[in-house]
Length: 123
Image 1 (tube, rainbow, N blue to C red):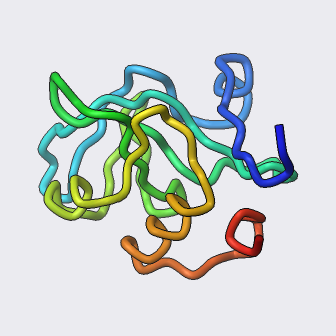
Image 2 (cartoon, one colour):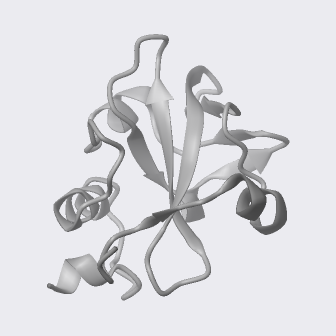
C-alpha cells in the first residue's frame, strides 16, 4: 500500500471507533432512504475516518462516497445533508478504491476544503 492509498475501516475498528456499520441505511436531506453503508475510508497516516462508502438503490453501481464530517448518525443509519440528486452526481468508484482523482472530485463536488490529511491531493 502506498502512503496516499486510503484504507478501509475493518469490522473491529468500526466497533471501537465509530457509529458506522456495514448494512446501515443512508438517508438524504429529505429523510428518504437512498442506500446502504458498505465501508468507512481512512486516509493513510490518520486515525480519523474521512469518507463513508455506500451503494445507492437495489442495483447500485460502484460505491458512492460522502464526507463523514457532514453526516448525522442515528443508530446504524446515517443522514446526509444533501439531496439524492447531489449524492448521485458525486464521483464513485467501480472497484471501491479512493484514488487521488476521486478524492479531488469529491472535495470539489461537496464544496469542501482540503484538510491536509489526504496525501493523494498533493502528489
